[in-house]
Image (cartoon, rainbow, N blue to C red; front, top):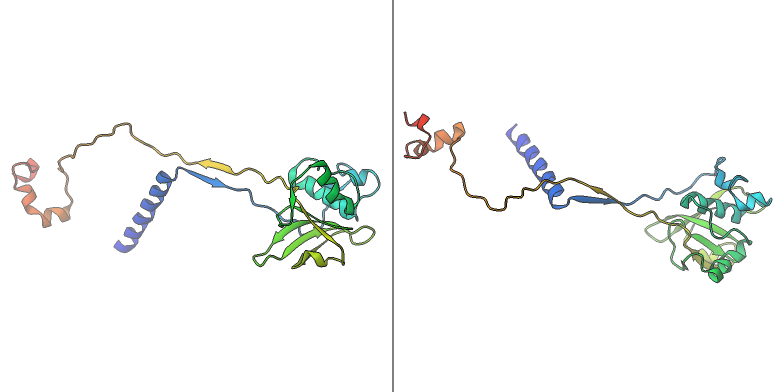
Amino acid sequence: MKKIIKNSMITVLFTLIILTVFPSTVFAAEYEPRLTAPNGEPYYTRELNAYSKTGYGMPNCVAYAYGRVYELNGEAPKISRGNAGEWWFINKNNDYYEYGSEPKLGAVACWSRHVAVVEEISENGDVTVSESHWGSTYFDTKTFSDMYSHYGQTFYGYIYTYDEPEEEEVKVLSYKTEEKDYSPQEKTCFTVLEVHKNTDLFTSPNANPIFNK
């Protein structure tokens, strides 16, 4: 029982130390991958999707990529025209988004005739994308170990369209005293154990008068 109480007190003390030494904790919003087909969300319909409004909605890889970027960022994508093979160059020529060869969550993967959105990246580097196919499959996901082998097309790279939200800082209050100097105080209260083990404490001139009688 004493051991359990001791361990509990150590845990509480350790927690208090952490909250005091580290008065704030930072939390980053977790990316939520889309691994199932859209189900009526406005980003993929004529309500908000620029491609759907012009009659080129899903199944269509660019219509899906447009909708997914819209869904992730909460605002209309800067690329709102062109076919799959043109997205890479439209972005590059207009300097809309940063781009590169490293996969990142929420990025648009661009091939010569196809685009898809990066949803997951495994520890071994495999990339899982969500996508749609013009005149064919409405939605699916695929995992690639080599992006250059996709349907025999030329792989251009990734457009970093995902606007990752800023980290949220949650502050934990810590209390501090303004008094800086402390002087040791004479101990006048004792436990029963101390009474038995240290009987000389109560025979000294400065001992509590209750125990001197």
